[in-house]
Image (cartoon, rainbow over all chains, first blue to last red; front, side, top):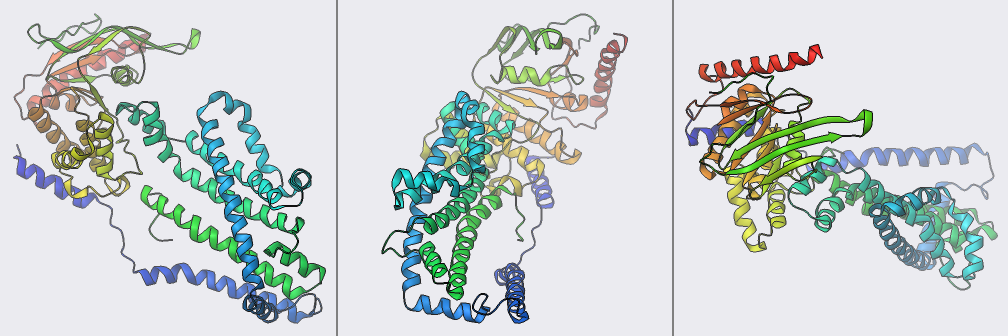
Length: 288
Length: 265
């Protein structure tokens, strides 16, 4: 029979052999590996755009090339109009998304906990998600006049169902074994919710919140195009003005701003949160 | 060593001098209703005395896991009574660790849910991890560990509950032989140091003989105690010794006869 010391040494040896080896990749190399496919794709898109312009399919004043659009964008950034517009729009985005988050999280946690509510409104929430947000605007404008409130109303309706659904799906798909483990440790309902159910549903909730952001950003753009508030610059208002003046460079420069903001928030904010959670849970390889 | 015939339902009673820490009296558990009803346990009688290491062996479908779930309070019996003196902890076949917590966090949560004050937790976590030789892995996440290491974290977490009765549901069933042997030695050492009561379910008869003071053979569908064997092989034991093999052989034959009965039904 092995003595205690040899037993401890055997255990340690087996542990060392058992632990999965993870390759060490430098930070710079990892960044480059993540960046180059994106840079290549961007170059190809710009190249194709330029090629279409050069083909003469449409005249320059309808379809300007990348150079003209980027110089227009630079001017609008330099004279401050785009900066003010982006500021107003981002403030609305933050406000509308926060409201949607609160409503979505509250509804989601209620519906996931109360069985009756679940049968009553569970499918309704999923149904709401299929409703195009722009279809809400006529009603919103009737109720709130063409004001910021109308835009926020539609943003909440567009994004909250996705956030609520994320939470509901998350609590639905908790492995029963983890719930049992929590109960065995002596967790009563409240403690079980706080220590097991809530953290276990986090990945799905974050996915729902990420989707909620995309929906609220789309609703916001639709809203700013439809609900023009006098003397108030915003990205949507810029786009609408550019359309009235048939200024193609201005239209496309504004579109680029919309796209870039959407991608940045999605990738930097939600992408990072998502990655951190997945890495902690071991759902993600370190590469990627 | 008592090895009665498998056909007669056997009542496993604790030795009269020791008060039973765990008593199961006439416990039945039926799943489902009407024609679809399946009887997992039928009038089970069982007693375990304090500090005993008892292994339950039986073919699949004998209600071993059901019994542990009932004892852990995860389910209620259809009829009969279960009494446990003190607290129970249950270890599953899988480690069932919380993936969002570190190794230390998993153990600390058990302490917290038991009501251990915050300032006492870190020290206890460290000594519990030391007991299972994982003190160097406190900040790791469960997915970074091997199966055997995860199961040891689960053991540390179960010990953190400071339970009087440790219920183990085939905890080493999915581990390789070498890891399992080491864990047997670890468990035996902890048990002889801390003297808690263990009710250990397994389908591996050798494992049962290797570990137990007493092996109970359960019948299948419905589960009853068919035989009760006191293992008198001196400790510490090794799974590959002739004495363990010989007794395991006898019990396996019993089990085989028990399973054959179902072929005629």
